[in-house]
Length: 108
Image (cartoon, rainbow, N blue to C red; front, side):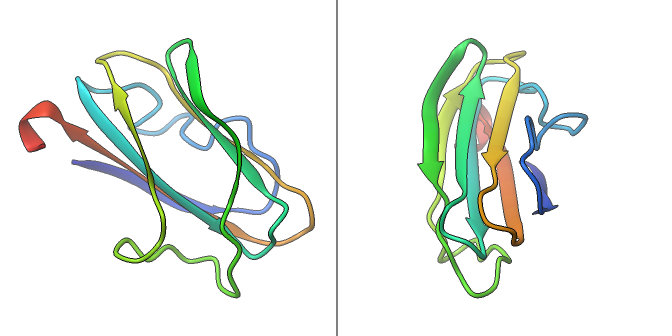
């Protein structure tokens, strides 16, 4: 498993850029969790040329830290070498958090 996460306060074209998950390290899945202190934030998730998750609202919460066990997640199958893009669009000022985890085929 490879895990990348952090916080953000502004629109980001790719939260995974320059990370260990800017491209899929192998065939497997990426599981992403995001939340924000505001309810008007959205995110999109792309793998290669496909963007199956587009402009989805982030769950709003009083605190933006991710709880791996309780917060909603999205799962996307990926192929080795595909560019991964996790884009966020910020509305009202606030703080957001994200956690992206890659699991290879042998870990599923």
